[in-house]
Amino acid sequence: MRVTDPAPDAVPAAPSTLLAEEIHRLIGRSRRLLWMASARSLEARGDSPFTWQVLCYLVHHGPTVQQDLAMATAQDPAGMSRVLDDLEGRKLVRRSPDTNDRRRSIVEATKKGTAWYRSAATTVATAVNDPLQALTVKQQRELCVLLRVLLQMPPVGDDAAPKPAKRRARTT
Image (cartoon, rainbow, N blue to C red; front, side, top):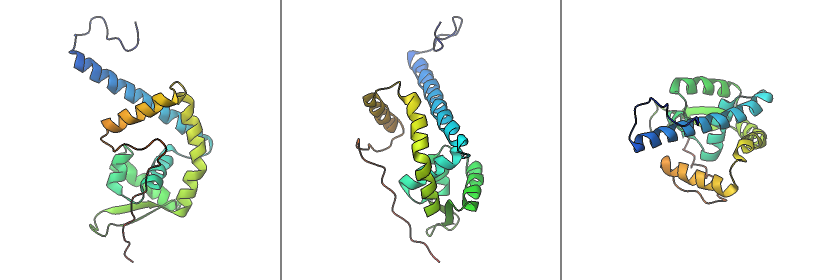
């Protein structure tokens, strides 16, 4: 029996239910596979995958509302706050009040944070590319397109890098 086959005595489900369950399991396992690969490589350097996740997002998308950053990186808001406390203490990010709503914080990578991200990028790319080698480059691009559709994200050209968001005006 394959791992993905239901148990013989399982209640049969509608095909769409089985498909949804299969997609859910496969995406979850794929996320874990890539997370573990990147985590091992970062931990070998004495770094954290949470640091990578936050700085990678901020470098590519620019200053971001803290709550939106938690959502974009699939982190609990309280956990995100603890990660940002650590990163702010290490001078890798800076938080400032949102000029439109002072109850919210805008988080941005500092120059030191951007340098940290750039120094870790090759390490993470190498680690993540190892499991991705099971797919051709064309399949990797197709997977990326499908995941962007699923997440309702705009398409990105093959060679286009994510564009940083415009910076919000800071008040002194």
